[in-house]
Structure formats: structure tokens, C-alpha cells
Amino acid sequence: MYFRNPKSAIQNQKGFSLFELMIAMILLAMVSVMIYSVLNVGIRFSEKGNKRILAMERKYGLVNLLQRQIKSAVYDVKKKEILMSSEDDLFRVVTRNPFIYQYAGVVLALYRYNASESAIYYSEKRDYWNTDYDEDYLPDFDEMILLAMDEESLNIVYDQEVSPEVSFEYRDEAYSLVPRCTDEKALSKLELE
Image (tube, rainbow, N blue to C red; front, side):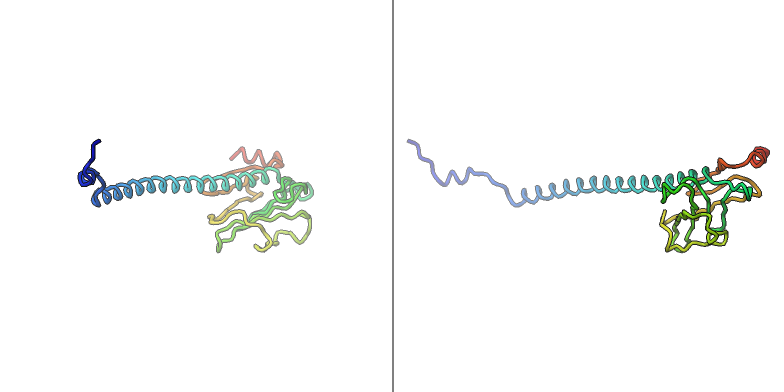
């Protein structure tokens, strides 16, 4: 039988020195910081992409709503005009394409820009023929719904005497639309220009 000396067994055991342990901790910290940096950049990139997609959805949603409502504007046979008008920060159109009251048929759609909030508001009136909603009617922002925040002015230009065309600029893109109910005389005038 062979016996070992206990002193020689202790001398043969190898362990980590404090210096080796500190180097390992520093390397682990550096790798962790690099992984965190890569993940953080990915998260920020994803957030920017989501914000951009949301902004595009909002933009095209508002433009699509305006296009549908302008295209389906109502022509008043008695007055011989399209029931649509625009002022500085207010656009009104009697349309067959409601947004809020989807089954109402024909509604008065009102768009209004609030410069102090940089916001676009919207409202609909089912009783569009009501004399309370004449050209002087200015809806209060409290009774309207918020369509978009942090927006530049939504300037919609429409003058039936000049042209049946409705023009507006939204987020650096210009749009021009002609309602379907425009009479032949107004369309021929538009083609001549």
C-alpha cells in the first residue's frame, strides 16, 4: 500500500489567483456591455421604425378619409353648387361617406385645425340640412374628436367660382381632387386650364 504525503497533495492543487479572477470579471463585464449596446441599438431602431409606421398610417388614413369624403360630396340641385366650403382653419363638406355615423347616409363633415395645440379635429352632423350649421357655424373643439396631434396646418383650398377642384397640402405632399358630382360645365373649365 502506498501512502501520500499530505503536504505534497496540497502543493499539487491548483486554484485561481485573485488576479486571474479580476481579469475574468473584467472580460465578462466588457462582453456584457457590448451585448447591451447591440441590444439597445436594436431596440431604439425598432422604436423609430414603429413611430415612422404609425406616422405613415396616420397620414394616409387622414388623406384617404378626405379623399373619400370629397369624392362623394353632395351637389345641391336648387342652389346649383356642391355643398362644400373652406376657410382659414375650417373645411366643411356634405358627404355620402361618413366616418363616425357610418350608417347615417349623408352627413356634414367638419375639419378644423387648432394652431395652439397643432392638432386637427373632426366632427360630423347627421342633420346637415339644419340651418344652425350654415356658413357661419364654427364648431367648438370640445365637441369635436381629435384626429391628429403635432401636425402642421391642414390648409384645404376650395372655391367653386374658380374651380371645382379641391386642393390641400398635408405633410409636404400636395393633393388635388375633383368631386364626382361636379357638373360638365365645371369639368370643361378645368380641362381648359
